[in-house]
Image (cartoon, rainbow, N blue to C red; front, side, top):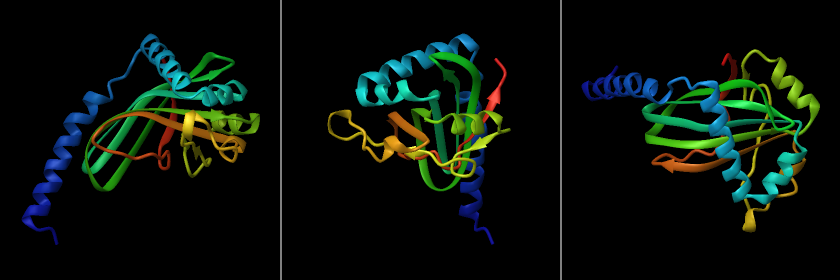
Length: 184
């Protein structure tokens, strides 16, 4: 049975999320997404020359330049990005997730998912809402000294990078994030 404090906390959380997440999650235009993707890739390549080399071998690259996460006990995450093949945008996607647990604050991060094999890319593109950890496992890469990448991570069919964490939360995972195609 909910105590008065628990009900109040739940109500405040619900109100915060219902007001703040739509502000963060306003739909971007095709040109805005493309521009933000270019900026995110420039930053990624600057931070990790090894990531750039790996990206050049990828069959496809899904780039979410701004993923916003906010929460007070109950949280949500949303971002829009583009799927690139051969350096050109072929489709637009969003990523969204919800979470319950100890969390307080907000953060903005960039995410890049590399599809290293044609099979991994085809599976992603043929899905109707692809969920990380369910429809495909994403090996999250942590940069070593000098921005190098472990050789084990470089062998995976789907490789993910999370960078530019700014804010009060910290969560380096793709698990539970659902990616869906959007029209732009």
